[in-house]
Length: 311
Image (spheres, rainbow, N blue to C red):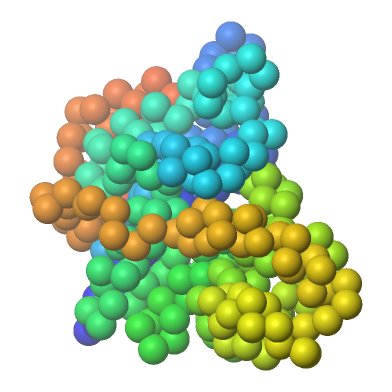
């Protein structure tokens, strides 16, 4: 059987869990656990439904890497806490739950990887490319940025949770990209995204160039590099306001690819093991966490999905 590697965009999932799972604390002074419960339950559902052989919870060790800020200073600035240098806004009741998620993953024995100086997207991109030719790769995310990794030939697809959650994700392959965005490949999606921009990431895009026009331009010229060569060469097909806007955006187009494109060669530790656990890594710690945070049901579901003994 071909290995199946599942890569979780962890923050995307635990934010979704936080906002989607009811807060049912037994007492008002108890620590909230809705993101913890929801995240654990999501992994159980994904393992049950897709039966990966390998799984990595990919982490944002740096949610706003310096190399992206250097390229485009507005990158994610709107998500920063006012008056701080690089602290990401996070709901007060979510923040204390994240370390517990880390501890639960470690106790169960599920691989988690963050790399200093890189976002989870870069960890995902690096692991996905490293698996080319050796595994089916499923990237689980609610973020369209990772559509650029779609590659039918290399068996990389996205399980996109923005609409149907982890139970009914959109399966994003090249046919989906063509249907939804009129681009043929993940690489073409990235080029289109540079032109279109993304206000949620502080990327302005090219003024007056929306998604459809961006896709049309990438389809006509093949990629962003060829489009820019055509601009420089004075291609008569590029004229009027469109040419003016593209020329005016030259500095942005110089910088944006380094921000939009995920890194595919981040330094992954040689010791990383991605296989699903065959035994609970620390049963005592898992029992303690389960009791402290009222996690009996989701932890039980996860252990069952992993074919591990109950606590």
